[in-house]
Image (cartoon, rainbow, N blue to C red; front, side):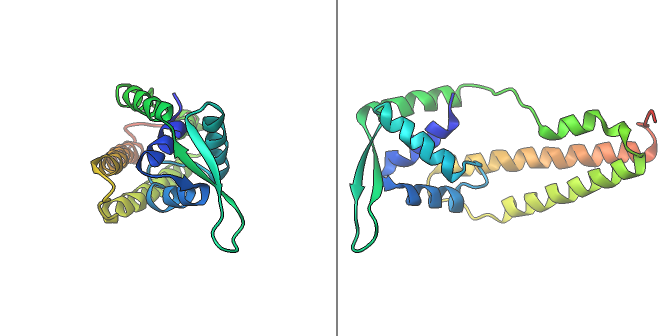
Length: 177
């Protein structure tokens, strides 16, 4: 399953766009939902074109250089719907990069580990504030649900960190070293 394909085909379902428009929209409106980079977007668009899911035409406005405009094909629209169904109907296995560090937490002095987890908690709280301050999107209920989902996960992370820190600080959980 390729979430990048789903994202780009979904954006093209509404209108034809050139690469800069697509990347600008992702960066300005979807950066809290996806971490897609410009280079990845262009590589995926190229592959989707080769597979017949999108058409590419060259367009020039005034004295500007020519640019590629991407349009979804009927086959691409059907592929998008199939990817959407697969995506919505699956529960991904959740892995969190921070868990690897937690596994080796007792290789640090306990006070340093606590300080680092407090720093992480402060960052999570800052992200929560950003999500809570974000305006509702007008692009459909789905964007708002995706943002709510991310906020719920952050709130859960905040709650867990507060609990873990309390247990570490009280000595309920102690280090081996």
